[in-house]
Structure formats: C-alpha cells, structure tokens
Image (cartoon, rainbow, N blue to C red; front, side, top):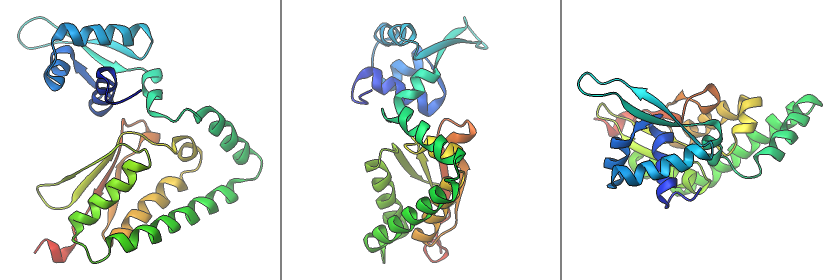
Length: 211
C-alpha cells in the first residue's frame, strides 16, 4: 500500500500505535471523522482492519481500530510467500549453516560499506546515516534522541521477517552489526518476530559525546 495515500497513512499509524480511535486518527491526519470512517470501513470490508471498544471514564465508549494479519501483510514484500517456502526448504534440508553463514557475511559487508560513510562523524550523524540506509532498504525506520542520552531506532517493516523467524541469527547478527558500526552498545528491546508491532533498538551514546 502506498504510504502517501490516506489509507496508507492510516495503516502506518495503526502499525506504529497498535490501535487508535477514529478521533485520534482524524486529529493525526487533519481530516474529518467521516472521512476517516470511510477509509476504515473499506479496510474492514477488505479484512485489513478490525474494530474494538474503548471504554472511557467520561462519555460513551468509542471504537478503536487495529490491523488484522492481512493488514500487517501490507508491510511485507510481495515475494514473501516464495521466500517463505525457500527458507523453510533450506532449514529442513540441511541448509541452516549455509544460510547463517550468508547472513553473517552479508552483515560484515554492510558494516564495511557504511563505515567509510560514518567514520569520524558525531554519533547523531552516524545514527541518521544508519537510519537512512535502513529506510532505503525498506525497513520504514525512524530515530529519536532520548532525553537521558542515547538514541532509539524503530523499524515498522521487516523485509527479512521470514528469514529471521526461522533463523534467529539474523536478528543477533544485525544488532551486532549496528554495535560494531557505531562503536556503541546497541540493544534490541522489541522484535517483530516476537510479536511486537515494530523492532526497536536502544543505541547508547558514546561516553565522550555525553560529557
């Protein structure tokens, strides 16, 4: 789904927040409630959104909307089904070491490729360069500087979800690549393969840049 469309923006907001009311969506997108409801009704009909009830302390209960599995599938590449079958075949036919070796080698290549672009730059610029690389690779990445120091990077799409689901080394090698590249500890606090709506990484600020 094209994120520039209203429906695409609704999908992205629901992906980020888990669930939202019509009022919240209307406010976030600066549209009328009727316009939002029109899009949500179509998404419900297509099986991409579902509604629930939010009880409020004051006033009537309000409908909230969240994505269904079909709605979340909008965030996965169109070749996901074929990739899923290929990865399952490799796993079940002795190809685990081959896949894990490929993943480690690929992350080493990415680290070397990015290192020349970020070396000698402040950590804030390094994190932004990393975010931009992930965005171009289809991860729908956002970053923010944390009040207590450090950064958080959030990714709402996982192009390698099928691989990571069957080969956990994809996630651990990825986090190690971030840490090695930035020269700072990086912790994966949320993972989509663990049922979270996004992958989140805490990037600790370098000591010299926090003093």
